[in-house]
Length: 168
Image (tube, rainbow, N blue to C red; front, side, top):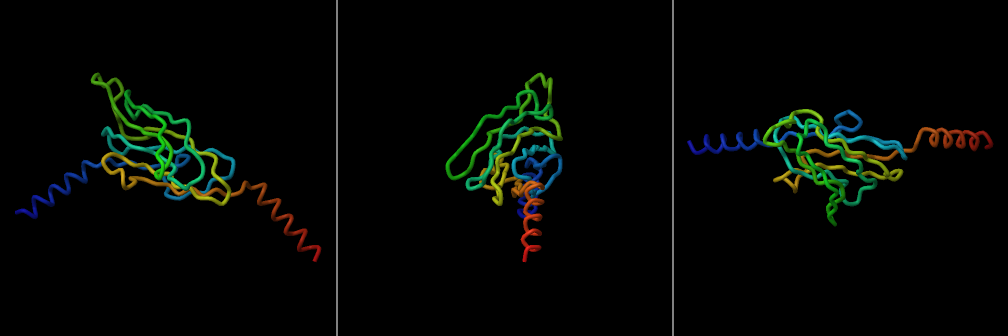
């Protein structure tokens, strides 16, 4: 009987957890290559209509920055975001969803926040992570971003290599 009660409690806790994921330019992914000098939109998508409090950050040691965060209608009419930085952890935003007692804009499933990511350095990788309360120690969603050269740079390097090869 004790095992059954413990199992039910575990299921109750897991079902109460918020399901959130990150999309990059509209595509759910865990790794992405971005062209140097471009800006991509990171979207936080809620898969349930619960309120939550959390942080989206570029983890310490990663390049680039998050900016221009926008709360979307699905985050409710009391949704908020404020800049956040902590040494040893990273920089980004503290965010939360919320709705007023009148529920003029209730929290709903779907895209809840958009935030821009830009400024990564060529050849470097950044980890963008979303942490929520009470699981601040483990990200609920992460995206690894690698910065690659723009296509024209690759083309010029290729042409230069062809000319060098032709001269020998």
